Image (spheres, rainbow, N blue to C red):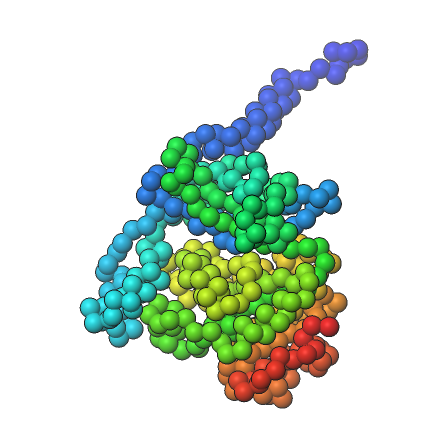
Length: 380
């Protein structure tokens, strides 16, 4: 066949193109339909915003990461009773303050994640407002958005937009009564980022003893590791230094850990915890913890290719091994590694020799319990 007719699609070809076009159209409409099917939060539902990160853009704006968990609180008293019994506690015999602490620490482990929920986010001192994607089955919703730099706050005591982006969730009608606060740490392109573990690094947890760990997590006042807050505050005096707190603890502990960092006078920073979990997966496996920490560190290194990093952890779990692996992958990006000793292993132990073999000895440090000075070489 010759002429224009030779180039006309056959019937099967037309059908294939129609199917492909239809699939593309459905793919484009899927997010829109999902958003239309989603609903605003009910009065008994909540949004928890994790402290995220904001990056200055080349054109003078800010790229902000927003991470939220949407849930509904529930109360299963039998679970609290079972946990208390396992820990050897009698809830009835606890003081009112101790009973309240236990209740607050366990509360979010009873919560039900809410799927297909939407919430708007409005930025303080700015006209920018955006609708978050509908929450998934795990109640999580995440968004990266570019906004104009918020105006300077009216109150001089308010956080500076050069260091923090403040925002709040707005749920719709009655929004003045139904808001949830959030913030993102502004991280300049250059400077030093301190990535710090939490448990047994800046907070006494005793991770190696499961029962003691649970008691310190749910029943006792959080206790700061000696001298660590003072050392961190000294590091924070260097311009453009930022802190990123990294832990395998689940996000249900985010409110308590945030309060601890603030009350213990550690520098504020972004928080990177595990996803929401259940009682059964409260204590992560070694591979889960390692994978979570390595993933966060790699993302921070990729997001900020011009920044230098200091990695701070403890000897109770795999922090030395994780940090040594990171150093070998990015030797020019890691200024130093600092390990707080909680296992009684000296710098000359077989573990450290094997872990830091072929890494320059001046680039890694072990801080012993009786040490009174931060290693001066930690930040060059």
